[in-house]
Length: 275
Image 1 (tube, rainbow, N blue to C red):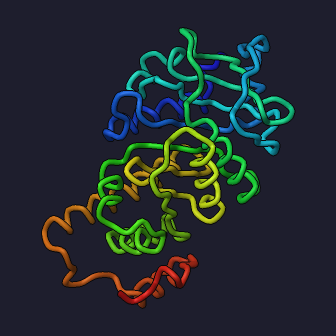
Image 2: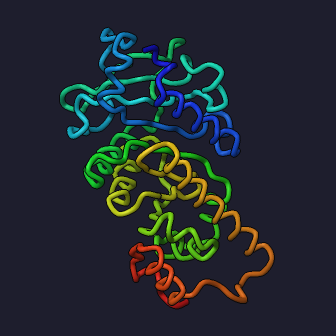
């Protein structure tokens, strides 16, 4: 099978295009990676090159040794993924130590995988171990309303979780574990990768202050849906704050507990503090 005919590649491309159409990927902003299943890699084996030069990842992810990933390219535009995928995305393989990668397909006009590759791979490793291998997608986008909130809300997990839970009833069902927050750091390096991977041991969502959001999920639909839900909740909060600084009514801690019973989710009590 040709790479571009594979269902998982089509899903990846559609997700990138959906993010572009949401306005989350100005210029070359954002990145997306997918840990390819063994049977999917085998289905496109005839188009995968083994001649690529091994290059350092910038971190070590031994649990991912030998894995294949579909990734967006550094400096590439999400708006071009659908129209010119062979230039915009790549399949990469990790070596037997999880310290180096090589390009097996794509980026035909040159380039390298996303500059956030260390963050993505460290978080893939964490989420693979935390979910028994179920999580395969890591997505970073410049979500406008979430970024705006990082200038006016305390950069605390409890505050962001509770405020966003209150904006829409579905939120505690979609992200019952809550949201982690990383203070501003230079993107693309090991420091932000380590900080995010620590949060991802507990959450599926991490907010990067003044930068965007980082999400993990089992497949493209669930991961995009998670990002979309959090950003929509943030949009509601931004609109509410623009109308008045306080709430006349809201979803209470007891309301959340009732919701958890009916929807069979566990909501950590530390997010249910009375304000």
